Length: 115
Length: 113
Image (cartoon, rainbow over all chains, first blue to last red; front, side, top):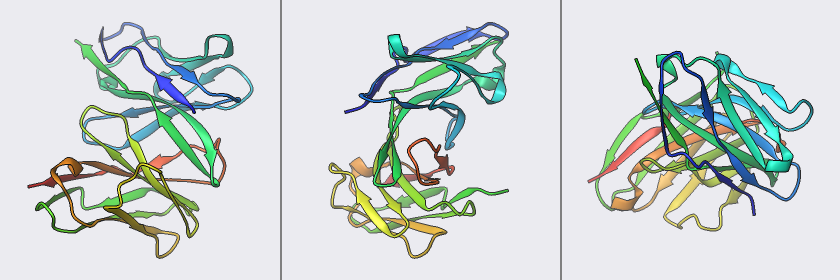
């Protein structure tokens, strides 16, 4: 069975500083990996995804993530954080299920941005 | 803009009183999902539809039902809400295929009194 671990429950970062969110997954085959962001009281928005090809993936809002098969990791990074990046971030692994895509989410990392 | 719409955004119901949450989409995706998200937790898949084929998760309580009358609409019915069912309910859609991302609606926050 697939699983996702996000080791950091909360991260506080200063505006303009860099940000890295950790994600480790467990999955038997080549994983489909996603990062979503959720602002308070809102749905989830896709930041980026990986399923093959270049292991460094560029996403929206200046985010990128690197897939490392040897470490079973898919960490999310942003070089310079803006106050609007304060939100909850979810890493997810997807698996084909009855023609849909079952996402298994990590527990999430809440990012606080200090002025 | 193509999107996923959920109504209402906030729903208050009484313990044991049936409630229906609505989801519609303009993306023309053939897969629709319902998730439950409790406070400070990750979303948990309840079930999904591939076209009209219903796929229930093994641990979804019988109290939760769903209907999909056409491609655009999907409903979540909670037959007898308990206090533990208070949560955010998220609807999502996708194209067929495990590598396709899911597009989420803004959610309906359910309060059970």
